[in-house]
Length: 187
Image (cartoon, rainbow, N blue to C red; front, side):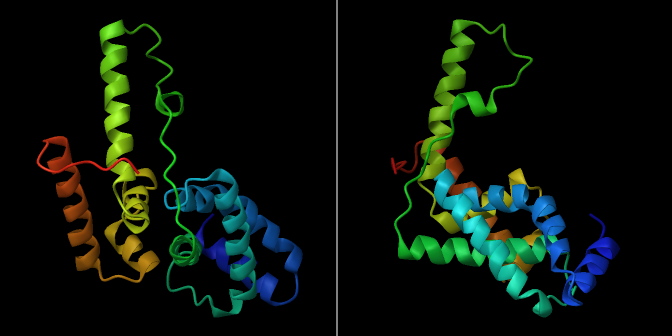
């Protein structure tokens, strides 16, 4: 959805056409849910929190100034609520299943390649589970959602330079874990 269209819909909602809010929910709920799942891996908990995010956003719509895109604003609400939820409740990391990531074009792979692929998934799961929720969130925004440093800064309320430093440190630590210089935790 383009920014002008977002602004128009928001103005109509603010002026009483609350039914239009479903357009925003339908447009952004898959991405908001995906961002939340970067912090809260349990599907049911993430879905519940996504609903809470949209409820909070609806009641806070008059605070949306349009300085950023609507998705950035929604991601910021999702980020804050996700981090708050993890502080209240210890979140267990759910491993990535190889079936979720496998490419459809690779149906004819050798047993050795399949073994290597499985070991990579295991390593990736261990690396991701060793990160705290806010670090997994940054990684999800940067790699899965392809958000820019500026957008991540807006979402997390962290200066751009700090986002760069955090991403660098996370990648460095993960690289050290892969090289065997650091122990990888299992959850």
